[in-house]
Amino acid sequence: MNIAMSATWQKVAACRGLSTEIFYPAPEESVDQAKAVCAICPVRETCLEYALAYREREGIWGGCTERERRRILRQRRKSA
Ligand code: SF4
Image (tube, rainbow, N blue to C red; front, side):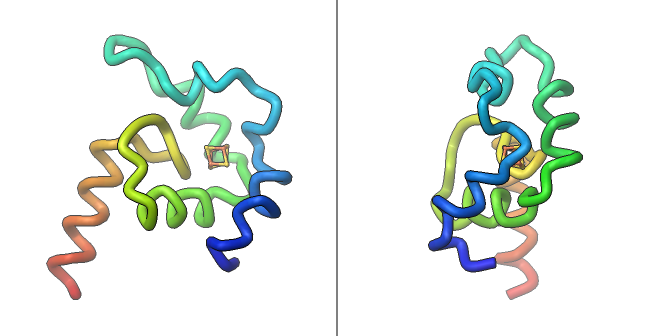
């Protein structure tokens, strides 16, 4: 799916209508609830690619934390 179609994919996101606080937990809070929602989201991969492309620094995107997204970007740079 084209990342530019963000308005479209966000319409079918599993997190649509849920509290954004779930996806932006405080440092000491668990990310489990957000990850559980992402795990059943039909647009998880598109969401993750969007976050990687736009270097989203905070929150859970595509089931990944900021640290996990940084790791993915590092791995991609190494294998490029
Ligand atoms: S992967 Fe997670 S954060 Fe991304 S749209 Fe789906 S539920 Fe929302």
